[in-house]
Amino acid sequence: MAGFQLKTGQWWCDAVALETLANEYGTPLYVYSRARLEENYHLLQTAFKALKPHIHFSVKSNANGAILRVLRELGSGFDVVSAGEAYRALRAGADAGSLVFAGVGKTESELIFALDNHLGWINVESVQELELLNRLANERSVKPQVALRINPQIEADTHHHMATGGHRSKFGIDVDDARSVLLQASQYLNLDIAGLHVHIGSQLANTGETVAALQRVLELAALHPIRNLDIGGGFPVPYRPDDELPEPAVFAEAVQQVLTAQAQRSFEIAIEPGRTLIADAGALLATVQYTKVREGRRVIVCDASMTELLRPALYDAYHHIVPVKDSQPSALPADIVGPVCETGDTLGVDRELAEVVRGDRLLIMSTGAYGMSMASNYNSRPRPAEVLVEDRFQRLIRRRETWDDLVRLEE
Ligand code: LLP
Image (cartoon, rainbow, N blue to C red):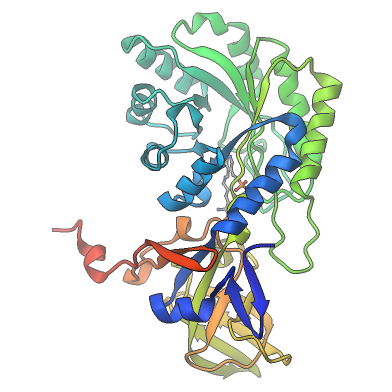
């Protein structure tokens, strides 16, 4: 397996020692393994091979141009939810036709960008958006491919902030409205309504809700000819060493069974993986600044924080944390925290961690997805550098921000 391994008492990214990267580029530092990203892509292709899906990497999980270029070279298309993400994907050399553009609040200028750049699919999330798009397309004498994103009103088994298909969710068109649109699709003279889209959430703990959502969407597919069914992403990754979560192949098999049972399949399938491709292909390096003792527990203050990795603070998410030089078997109770002026700025609490002191490096694992893409400059902290490891070589794919970068856009 490529990626992050413990060898000879220290952690490596493929053939590059992480201590070396920390010394050369400083910390906090995002490190990505190209080999692991490629491995994950091929594993996903194999898992879904019976469905022959179009794969659209979810740019919101990681928008770095170098990462997008690797995925484009692998043959991936892109799931984008803003004109900014579409801009990034096109800048990375993506074919416009390989972009699917969802998003519950697309602005008129974003829809115009999508039309003018001939993006592959516009996944519409309300009847009002459909009518606006129809007008804009008419004004430009174009006829874009349109999918209806369906809200199946099914609560996914995931963190409530990551569920997107439930009754009160802001996402998608509800089934009754979608039915009306499909039965009157011909009235939208400037839209080629030929797709359906459903994405019920992220880090899905099981396939049950996916199956139920798909069954509901397929009932709509019987009302109007569709060429493409986009089943979204959400395939989970094991953040904890003992996590037991369904592999992508389990989702693929569940989808295949529903399609076989319920549909005379005349349409193609699309999937929108993010986390499952990039999460464990990335990790965040940090350096211990200070240690304290509070009620018998060590408090380890490091230089990474909620501004580099928001997930623990926002979702109480777990990321495995180990010392880069991991030669001690002993482990002591510890809370690993960041320097930001927020009590919630923690990276890992109630952990067992070997004794570490100022200057030691820590590896915060499975942070390739929703790590840098959710980073911020809160507390006026420059965002970290990103490095891509390619076997025994590495290259800087985003430099560390400076204080000048913080104020560059201000008067
Ligand atoms: N397609 C759509 C329409 C989405 O909204 C998403 C993620 C994906 C695909 C990719 O889902 P994935 O395969 O990465 O699970 N910030 C959260 C994750 C939010 C996911 C939002 N939508 C986190 O840090 O876990």
